[in-house]
Length: 409
Image (cartoon, rainbow, N blue to C red; front, side, top):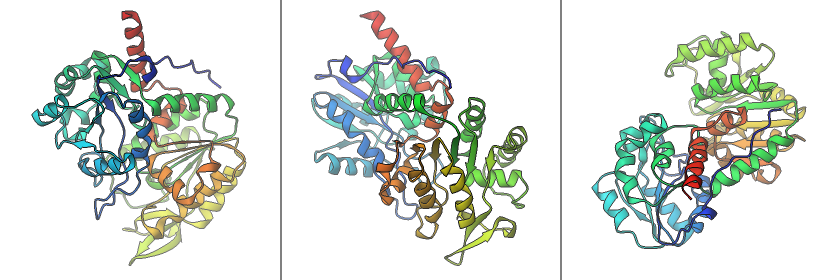
């Protein structure tokens, strides 16, 4: 069990916020219905309110991303502004721009107590790349916008593992502090990690495979993963590595990911559990089958009941359970089963439980299981990495900013 030092970062309570123009990097990245473009779960937007309430005497500019270039969740932020308006029962200004003249003018014209939401940060090319903190500070985004702000508030814990300009750049050139979400996440997680006990069961799903492959190794090496139960796309990658799925998965960098999964299985043969049965879509109907029966062109959309039974046994014997990412295409009624059953197994176990990721927190709420979980976080990949003991770029930026600010005082 590694001891983590208490994170020394500044919070909103360390600043006089009255009349200040504040850049707030939040994470309003929500699940989006691919057909209608509507927001399916508003949990991440709801979470921003506590920080926004603390900034009620400031001029507030919210910056967030939504989806990534090329996927069907990559949209503008106009709907997010409407959701926030409804939740807060007050006007939220919105500008269809991120770093251009329209955005700059909207920021300059803000009155005390007003909130402005910028458009999707990833419309700005720089926000799609990782930078060193020094280079992030030199990006056009940071050099243009930082002149307009007195303070930078980082409250985007789900993106804390990215070194994008908005995450690490502004903190180089402005006083910076943690928002309420980050402050609470770090405090709660550190408390949980001091009581976490073995066996550690990690359940991974969702679609972001490459981040997870890196993190799995660290989790195992740091004694945080005695059993890794695989679902979703990452489960398919491991089944392909075991030669249990014969045809290609048709995903980006497939060969690279399959070979990484293959060597992980070779290095840690007793750690991984992969599905034994799955569900596919046949003419709009859910069809369950043994993994060995999968034929070319079948798209795996969920876990089957035998896998649920197998995984539930491992969960019931756990001391600590961490689950991140849905088990299947849970947005579709026919394929909710796996995610729902996994969450039930976690909620009803005697273990210390952590549920992570925006999609899973949405599902947890739908199932009414939130009260049975020790820690719920909308962060996915960032939380996985945090548990490995790795220093997250955003936390490092906040710690450095705290040292700089205290030295100036």
